[in-house]
Image (cartoon, rainbow, N blue to C red; front, top):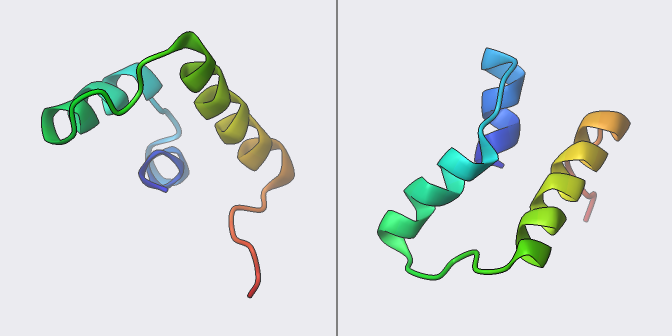
Length: 56
């Protein structure tokens, strides 16, 4: 959510930098290449679809 908010207001995101900040709070939060790929794909899908919320 934080990355999408930043994209919305600043028109730029830094996934690696954001994960680095998260690691300061939670060690080992993203550890593998597959996890980074998942993040990139999820962000890309949100950008492409414009839909970032799921209705209840």
